[in-house]
Length: 429
Ligand SMILES: *Cc1c(COP(=O)(O)O)cnc(C)c1O
Image (cartoon, rainbow, N blue to C red; front, side, top):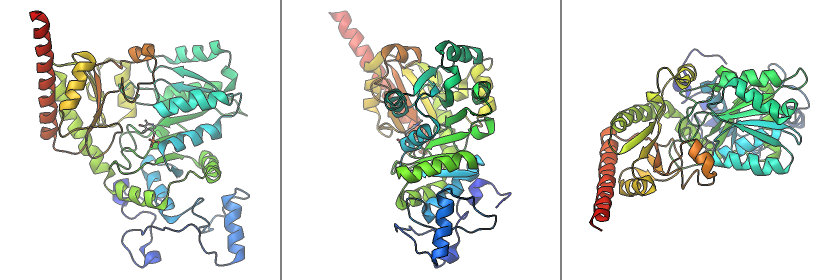
């Protein structure tokens, strides 16, 4: 069904018919494992399509079978998520990691090569470099600052370029907001694809989607989310989503049916609640982030700021930013003077902002990448990508920006005082 209305106008109603649920304005939680067929013929027809034995007929209305395959809460949620990314189809998973691992398992077979961007989410990195490696899938990482020619050279020099099956990217990169050019990755995928073997491009859009960026518009075949983050947005659930065209999503959905890693009716119901406020939440978070970045920009305790709203206008990053994103997002990383001690005293002093990993939620969260989310990275890579001892990552929430800035300001001052006191003590000795 085509509609001229914007996604935010449809998040309360799309895909749900109240008359099928006693007139309830909101979809009830369909807490059931299985569904009654009207006739045996109907059951047969539903299974034929679900198992891919035949295509759905043009005007055929498919009913429900079993909650591992489909469930009203899951289907309404998937229909609504499709609107933001203008995707044909969506599959929702019980976690972002299950969405990611299902995609990688479906599109990569032993002997294949995966090209992926560095750094990538820790769980994704582990899956690529342990599980996939052990089953004979070779991976090659590239950095956001590498040009198209350099990445192509990297592939050719590896001697595996004819085995390339998928490019997997995460942009902006966590935690320093480095950008990857999606269109460039599409060109690389097409350069190594053949008529018999397409090279697929998948993009983890957790940081910027679905409001500020739609990777499908820039040539990605698949877009992946940890719905635990902005989409869920309340730090009260774990979920993931994958979107794309009919062809790729049929494959992803069939594998999900057999891995059985779909989201539960209750999780889907919570996500439906979350989608109604997705846009207002994310816009408020972005507004707050801008105010905080302006405050941090010239603060004497801050030696470096990673925020997409203050990129150098002449840089390649800025050009990519303008093309791929409609706002600078709500993730900020900044370096506090005084290394780990400086960062820790700042983190320990915060009141309103909570010290926790995860991101994209209504409450602001802060963490220390070098010893928390990115602790597993080798020191050379940490150094190279700017994960210094003093770096903290802030996910900005929906609180009043002045309260957030007051909290940050107080903690930075306390950190500065602690630092000066220490210096003084050294001098006395
Ligand atoms: C959190 C996160 C994931 C993993 O998602 P889970 O829901 O925790 O399984 C993947 N990618 C990115 C960018 C994330 O932030």
